[in-house]
Length: 184
Image (tube, rainbow, N blue to C red):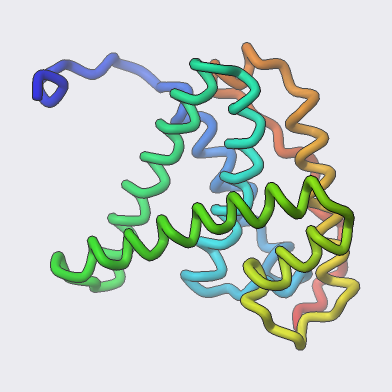
């Protein structure tokens, strides 16, 4: 209860920097135009969830500070989700139920992408097909493979980043995938 009345520190917080870069990366048009991610609220959530999972995996290596920062980013994700749901007209009575569904989806993505990254390329591609592409069999295998290659590259890129920079709110997800603007 005392935390409700505590003053927040002025200025940007590390989670703000991480969140801004994460959202910018996840909203890049190449994913929606070139890699067949559905340009819908659910598709955008899936891209944010994918990048959040990758960031959370890396922050876990930074022990307590990383865990606390991952929690702050997680909280920011759901605070923004709450706002987005309200903006599209979901009423107060439906917010809690929808947020719980998104939370279950995020935790499922964490498990699926962790297993996919630990497994071979087929395991990661299957996890992406099932989750990011919502099981849509019309998405070409080459597109799923390109997305899997991107995910692996981001995981490697994040692993090479300095912990102190991450804890200060600086993250670099690397280059966006270079694909044609071909869509579905």
